[in-house]
Image (cartoon, rainbow, N blue to C red):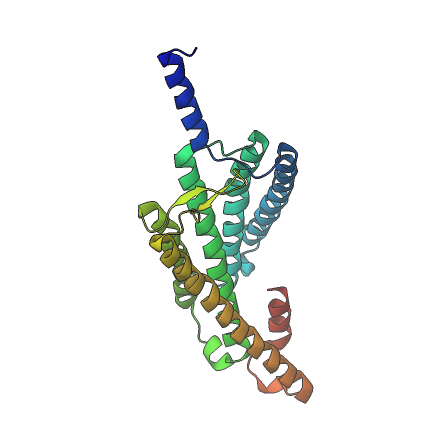
Length: 247
C-alpha cells in the first residue's frame, strides 16, 4: 500500500511532468535539427561578420543606401548568434532547457529580429523603386530619409515583439519542445487578434509593397533596355542594375 506522503509525492511529480512541454520529435530528430542549426548558425554568423568587416574597412561603402545592408546583417547576426544556439542546445537536451524567462527572451528576440528583417527588406524594395522608377525622387533622398525608414523598421519590430510579453497574446514552447514562439495553443481572442494583426502589418503589407516595387522596377528596366534610352535617365544605370540584382 502507498502511504499518504508517497501518494502526494507521486501526484506532485506527475503534475510537474504534465506541466513540462513534451516534444513531438525523437531525440535522433532533435540531434539532426541541432546539427543543422549549429552549421547554419556558424556560417551565417561568420558571413555577416565578414560583411560588416568590409564596411568597416572601406569607407567609400558607407553610403546611406548601404546602411540598409548593414542593418540586415545585424538582424541575421541576432538570429544566428542568439536564437540558433539556444534552440540547438534545447534540441540536444531533448526539450526546452532555459525555463520560462529564457523562453520569453528567446521568442521575443526571434520575433524582433525576424520582423526587423522583413521591414528592412521592404525598405530595400522602396529604395530600388524610387532609384530606378522615380529617379527624380530617389536622387533627392538624404541620409536622414534612410535613417527614418530604417528606424521605422526597427521600432515596428520592437512593438510587435514586446506585445506578447506585456499581455497581448503570449510566448510558450512550441510542439517540438526545443523552441519558443507565440502560444497558439490557447487560440483565444488575444491570440487571434495579435496573429491577424501581425499577418496584416508584417506580412501582407510588406509583401504587397515589395511586389509592387519590384514589379515596376522590372518593367522599367525592361523598357529602358528595350528602347536603348538609358542616356535619358539621370542615374548610373549599370551600377543600379547590379545593385538591384544582388538585393
